[in-house]
Image (cartoon, rainbow over all chains, first blue to last red; front, side, top):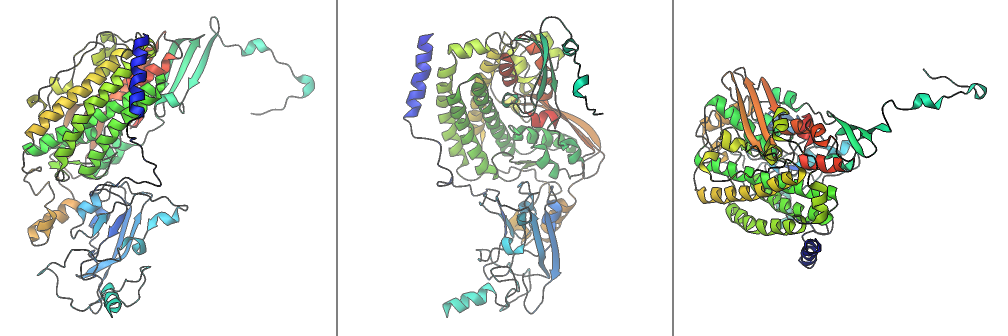
Length: 181
Length: 409
């Protein structure tokens, strides 16, 4: 009987001196996988146009009814996305979202992307309604506008482009050019 | 109706308040928020001294209407709510449901898809048994084992995150295959885990197997004999601990389990200690199945080649109008499933989980009825607890392994 206890204690003692498996969480974070389903983002093409074309498939696919999309016609002079429509209003209710990833699967243009960001706690309920200002990624991605699918939009810049998602009249492309100059 | 008793009229006959019955019998309500009840179970105990005379479990505190919810979601969307039932083995829930729908549709995914399904479901079994081992050991009083067992589970959850993007509720299986193929390098990671896991489990067994406290608390506690267990609908490790070698994977093979070689551990006494042994041995059997599945894993498609059921690849949407039409139709409407009803049973870590799916030929399930194994185990608890000591209640509940997301659904 004592032998069994000694064996068990010996095991715990051995593990005690092993490298610890736990991490000091807020200071040290575990890298999340490539496919991690965290906060949503709406990506941009390499030329700065939004990839979302406001087709509302994510809204339909969502089993928790967390997404609201209201599309609007693009202004042909200064379009937001390559296509007829763009997401004029795009809201994700993070309190309803179950992070199942069906919206990402449903997106035909790969605009909607679930990021690795997973620390979404906040203080008020209102702050969990993520609108365009927090969803649209202000940086461009490696995706290019597909050829022969959308009409050419050379030289046009998106309307919603300010850091807070409000109109500034200056698209990321214009901003980048301004940075260069 | 409240009334005020004036101080001069205060009369109380203490004898009227005494509980009827022999000796000092009393009723004790445990839970629903008791740390040993693994969720929200209420047990109303009638005890005489330390002896339990009668136990009445009360369930329903975690009822979330999952079955009803599934009825107004499409066949694909229902997967996401159904894997939130048994939150310690969501992939078993996924597998049961998609197998049932596939049975109605008359399709079967290609070999790679089937193998990955079995691989992940068996990993899930190891994870679920690991968490059972940890929490049971904690209830008995061994805190180190909780941490060691959770580490095994953590390694598996990392694998799930790698494959599906989520740790707890992967929603990874789809009707006709998988959400997507496993990423590159996944097999090596599974291999590394399979090399590591037996060592970890052996350490835990060194601590527990012969430990006198562990033996005293579990041996001969919560005994249920085979006849009683069968009559109460007990399945899975709890039934096998009583000596009935019933395993759905062997009795009614599904998803290709008949091609795999594995043994079914069976206990003989039907007590908590046998339930422990059966589960620990089962973890090693799952380990064996995982090894075989890895050997069988060959490159190839994971989904059925049917654009009316499976979403087309994203790259194709950029240049094919047909693919785009299929994509829009599948996401917005889903697919119709021929009218009919099927029952698909499978061996979840807890026991026989059954999906009785009825279709009326539309894009949404008409009814999804789930036979949750833990529900029957909770109502076998009175039989296990009869005559036991009050302190053993904790060990009995823990060894029966109920998960209340599934019991209450």
